[in-house]
Image 1 (cartoon, one colour):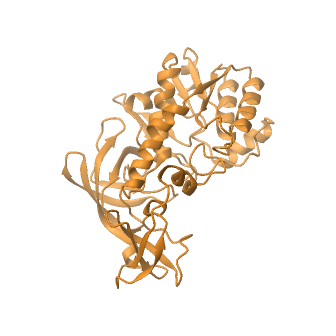
Image 2 (cartoon, rainbow, N blue to C red):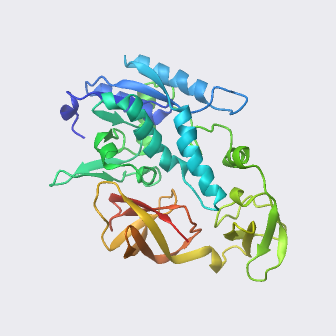
Image 3 (spheres, rainbow, N blue to C red):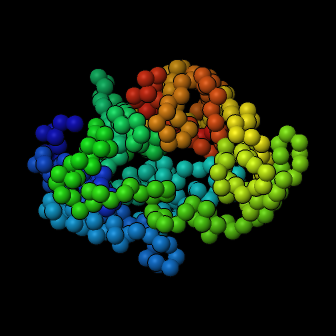
Length: 359
């Protein structure tokens, strides 16, 4: 990133209260830039409803903005989140699919609702994502991976639009996480040692199961062994379980893996053992491929279906408008409908976009 090219740009920083976005402010300020900071309010004001860390986040964000002489403004996107991201999430889990709320939060809220409310007044929106960008000879901007394979967050950005990417900058995307911590320590940032948030972006201490229960309740049904058809227990609602899940099932006689859901009959199918073949797939369909910048992937790709450091090699077989069959070089564990298959080039450098798994 050439900071001298940004001197005449109006820059908005999405300041969350975490160490990553705090170091973003430091990076910009240390290069003579004066961004405005914004805290996106997503959580509820009702502390009895959600045990949210918003108050602590605000204290941290305020301290960082004050340290660098930046203006801080709170932008209320609470209703936007619940109307868009939560509705998407609950529709998917009710249908027996595996959604990714954080992917849609980036598209609909951080680069969506925020832009509509305040970001439209700025040339660039800076975030603490571990991702990078590059511009090719044709002036096309690409989303590219971070050098930190564990923290790389391009998979969470693979549903954003071209216009959103054109406004996005990721000032810490070229760092390793340890380097970001070291900068924060060196600059005595108030959140230098604050732990990274886990799970859905605003839930705080509320876990995902409780999040789903509050909207969908419980619907008990049978758990059936896939190979024999034998009933081995009951579940509380198929939406609490994901394909490939092994931990936290609570069914006796295990270990068990979730291998299939029958939503109409409210049945969960499980397979016995530590590594059942039924938990793996090598070929699977995807649909509604979303290209970030309009470029479609080549035949040979790498991909991810969850947030892990590993990339899998595959070939793509086009089968219709925006539809493909992914032929993975290796069997993949826990492939589930509704997951995003995030597609990269063969060197897992450029991210083309993502598509939903349909099986």
